[in-house]
Length: 467
Image: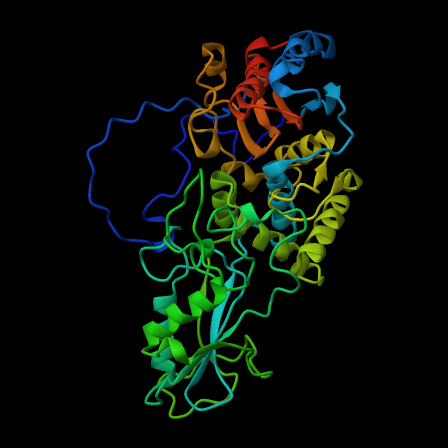
């Protein structure tokens, strides 16, 4: 029996998303009177048996009229796979790469988990600089780093706690300047295929740097629609926040690099009378990588996605740039036995219109993660939005009423660019069969009607059984 390790759990599950108290966050928010939550339905509950397998003919009969909907435009790429049988049930332009939008993040999540593992943590370090009183903060690529306890991501590493460590390690040595070392990432800070409208403050991504707080945001609040204001120079902004916590003026903050002797193995000496250049003064670590990826998938956070793609490159010893990350991701897909040749990547978020991914690659990736042979990959399913319940699917599958049959049953990643609407994920049919699917429309004229048309396809697969 196919078991979705992180997803297919019999019984009710708690609504996904940031929850106060995770990873040591002991703060208790002020209670707010709200309308009671509805009792959640089982989310991809494990079938008690294999279930009756759908037939390709029945699936074709059910889906053909929906795939031909004018709302999806003239160019639609579709693949539906029976995970247990590894049988293709439906295919239309399935092996032809097309613009994936944010369904690209499925590949980013899987390759990052394969390269680093779910428990990997990202470290932000502070070391002594070359001159007396100089502190160097070294970005380790953690996009969820918070300035203090009021960050966007519960349990994130915090600059104020790092500052406390540094003050203790410096002892009586006055701190006079802060140097920001964001040299871990290489190359351009924006990707080929991004428009100027994509970049904050008007867009949904920051410049990709190795040091930032709250994924580059000016305020620790995520805006799903419209602009998501972020710093024009996230690393320098984080450095100035850190400097303020150390009692150093913003004018004494500049970009640079840590001393060559700054090794991760050089621990801080508490209240040292004097510190040597490169000596570690403090370190804070992110939550486990699986949690960072959950936030990436739930909120479709483009900035987190790009930093996660660079982790694939770093793990492979490749250049942590847009090009290096794209090449490393494709190489990792091939190592996993997936058709990596059916991806042409320019970023890890899906913002680039130059990206191309086939539905076949997406469904095979999902099937591999769901199959149980690679348990580290199944961790991604906890982050995928649930129909009518969480993330970017929270308000989907509501209308028309037949779509509601899929609420709590479909777990999938959405993708939206102008004229492009995609949906890829997993579901369980009414007969208890696990299916992976990808529906990619690249010539839509209205996003609202296109999303509803995509939902109809997934809902039909849930309801029809097609056996």
